[in-house]
Length: 383
Image (cartoon, rainbow, N blue to C red; front, side):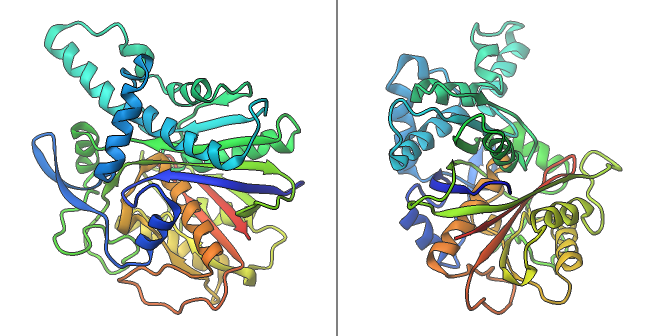
């Protein structure tokens, strides 16, 4: 890193809530936030937003006539961005960039409009503008009345960490000094869940932990979807209010054998982790927040990649998907949030069904994300 990049604020909504203290208290418990809900005409394991947050999202939607036709993925991003900007203390005239991406985008509206088209052979006037991916960052920019660059992209499940890469690049290039970075995902729709079931990766388990993310002994895939949005504020240089610093960034792409493939030892993760750790003493990395989606191959291959990179001295390994589900494009940012919270509280969050020694201190945390297409990203953060 040519210059220090500080993370000065964070905001999120997920099945764990919307306030740092509430979210941290959830992490301190072994209980999952995944429950069985009726989506469409079927019951499925999902991690949904708490009722009180859904009510606040509804109030936001009804607060402005222009917002009434927006997809949940956009509304979630508006909600967390408002929370974030209150924390930053930035002046009205502050120029900042925005990059908030999504893997699936406007799932609810897209399915609604497509269903209407199949039935009537016509679509609503707003079908196209409300389902384009650019909706998210552009509406956030409008809501915050920002004048800086606004970018939207979709790089499957590593989307929000790719947004961080992009923001760092803009800032290191001297084009802007501040950035709002994140992801937003509202994938709890019948068609989206059906797609995951068609891949045979969705959880059919019963019991306390429907998603067995990083259970290396499981015999079946156990991925479960969750919804939510998460954003952070990035600023150049040392800051008194810094929650953490970005010390390293890494990225890599695999050559695919098929549409959802990942190599046996996750070559993409090996490369992205090695890039993020360039010039760093590996012994200072005390925790790795894994992508670990709850699939057999996804979990095992990432573990093997970590073994290849770190050798016999493995850091503490954790993931949050057993607790709040896989939020697609938001997942990397929610993992980063967990990393920041562990640095702040100097406490590692274990996985209930994976035994390991807790670290005595937490100096640096490595955060991984990867998506269909083998697009891996690794971020190294420190206090």
